[in-house]
Image (tube, rainbow, N blue to C red; front, side, top):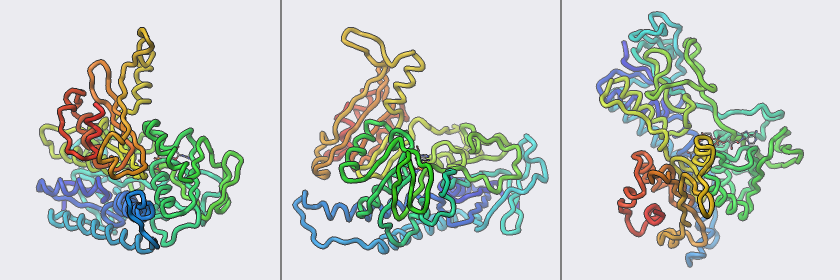
Length: 469
Ligand code: NAD
C-alpha cells in the first residue's frame, strides 16, 4: 500500500501529525518502537508531574499548620506513587492509541529505518516515493515526517560510563525506591524538577551546575527567588562548579569531592538520528535536523518535527510543529507558521516558574548590540529602550490566601517606544495555569493598553497580569 504520510516516532509530534493527516482523509502509517506518547508521556513530562504532585501533597500535608490544619503521622509510600504514575501513563497511552484507531491510522510497533533510495528520493525533486523498513516489511509513502525525538546526553566525564551509581532521568523515574541522598549534575529544567521531587520527599539534594547560575535560560531575577528559597530550605546548590570525574557516588568538582548514593546526570538532550542513515544528504545543524518555518527539511517531501529539530525541546512545540508541517503538506490556506517568540514554558519547581517571550537580559543584550547601549542618557540617568514592570505575587489576594509565607514575582518586559509586551515571567503557584494568557498577548503583539482591557476573574492569581500593568 502506498501511504500519503509515513511518520517515524509516536511522541507529541508524531501522534499529532498522524491524527491530523488521518482526519483529513489521508492514509497514514506511524512507526513507534516503544509505547505511543514518546518521551513526554512515558519517561518525561507526565511521569515527573505525577511524582511531583505526590511529593507536593506530602509537602503540603507536612506544612499545613500555617493554614490551621494539623496532620499527624503523615507518611508517603513511594512505591504507591510510582504505581499511580504508571496507571496514569498507561491510560493516556491507551487514549492516544484509541484516537489513532478512530482515525484509521496504521500504527506499526517496531524500529523503523529509511531504506536506501530506490526511486527518485532524495534527488531534490518533489514526487519521489520514500521507503521505510520496519520488522522486515517495506512501506511506501509520498511524504516522510521524522519525529524521532531526543535522548539524554551523557557528557564525556571520566567515571560516568557504566557507573551503577549514575542515573539519567529515565532511571530516576523507574526507580522503585528513593535514594538515600542524591547529587544532581546539571541545574537545568530536569535537574531542578528532580531536585524538587527528592527534596520534598526528604532526600538530601546537591545540585552541581557548571554555569554561574541554575536555569541559565530563564529570567535571572525570577530564578533568584527560587534559589533563595531552595538554599534556605537546605538544598545545596553549587554554581560555576564543573564536574571533573566520578567514582561510584563520589563526584569530584572544582577540586572538591561530594558524595551521594546516586548521581543524576541531566545536562541536556541530543537529537535521535538513528535509522536515517540512508538520507545521506539530510542537512543537520548543531547535531539536529535543520528545518524551515514549515518544518520541511532540505530533502523533498521530508519533514521533521519535535526534539529532533533541536529548536525548543518542549512537547507543545513538537505538537505545534506537527500541525504546521501537516498544514503545509496538505497545502492548507492560509499557511500557518509557528510563533517561536511566544512559546510558553514552565519549570515545575515549587513554586513553579512560567515564562513566555524575551527575558530582561535578552532585551538588554538585543538593544546593546543594536543600538550600542541599552538606553539613552537623560537628565536623571539612563532611560532604557525597554521597560520592566514588576510586582510581588502577594499583590494577588488569591495568592495570599493559598501561599502562606511564600513569596513570588511577576515581571513584564515592554518595548518602551511602542509599548508592546515582549516577555512575561512569573514565579509563584499556580503561574503555569495562566501563562497562556500572557502568551496570547506576546503572540498577538498586544500593547500595554490593549492587554489592560482583558478582564481576569477575581479572585485568581492570574489577576497579577492585570495589576502589574
Ligand atoms: P537543560 O539544557 O535545561 O539543562 C542542562 C543544564 O546542565 C544546563 O544548566 C547546563 O549549564 C548544565 N550542564 C551542562 N553540562 C554540565 C556539566 N558537565 N556539569 C554541570 N552542569 C552542566 O537540559 P535538561 O535539564 O537536561 O532538559 C533537557 C530538555 O528537556 C530541555 O530542553 C528542557 O527544556 C526539556 N524539559 C522540559 C521540561 C518542562 O518543560 N517542564 C521538563 C524537563 C525537560
